[in-house]
Length: 129
Image (cartoon, rainbow, N blue to C red; front, side, top):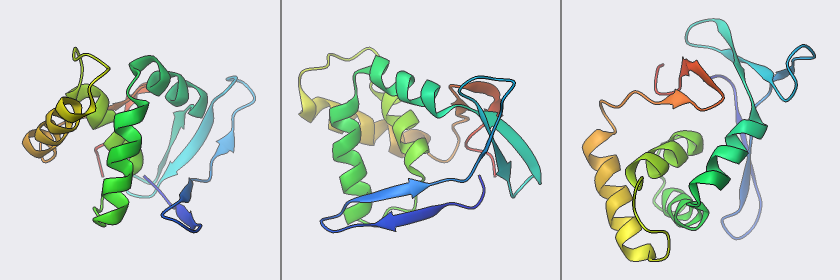
């Protein structure tokens, strides 16, 4: 969306840092600057975290984030998370192998055409540039 930094640590670990301006009128929300549209977007890290937790896909998300880093896949982590959650929707949670296959197949089939919306603000299309 805008300017972001990746702070690298040892052993393939990093933290994505995205600057935002806290919104005092909306609890848990912040505004991010979209450098492509030259506008600001309202979003919430708290709602993003809750969305991932409710999906119960943390294990597959962690594995595919590692795959993304090791293979140097140029895909935003936030978009990867949303693709995994959508791709594995309706599947059982306990077996990783079919989840990995299904998620990668879904990403392959949809990455160029899918429109993903921010779970914290449906006005934000996160796949837009």
